[in-house]
Length: 193
Image: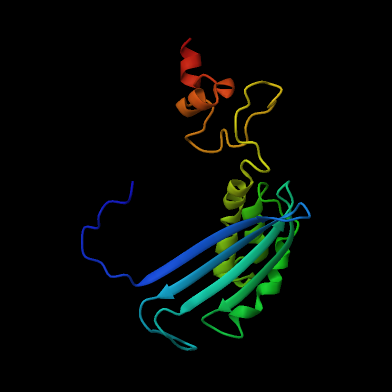
């Protein structure tokens, strides 16, 4: 279902696009390539000069390489278009500081500690924040078993995605329907029994 129709006429002024692609590598690692662009529909006066309409103000890339335990083993950042050439585009090497972080264990806090504010690029650091959930989506069905096995032999542990969002809470209707083996009675219902 799309968003509701706008209440007033509108004119597009700015587009921010974020694209994440995940690649399984031959060596067993995964590359997660993140790309962000900011594009104005009009010529934009920047301190560094005029950026013509349709040309990116930001065109930034971040690649992390992770193992199947979601540990960052390599990182690279590149700035192809920036508002302050020869200044913004010098921070890329600092994104190696992501190495050693784990996407599921304090990743966003680690990014903040290592690369927030003047320690990094605001936009590349924001881009890093979407990497955990994007990587989980990439791993689903390949690295992480997200289905409910028909027997205990097929799967002896709870599927990864359960209890990670409101729809897939183990005391909810979706889990009762699609993952009945892992369904638990809601707390309120079990207290009144």
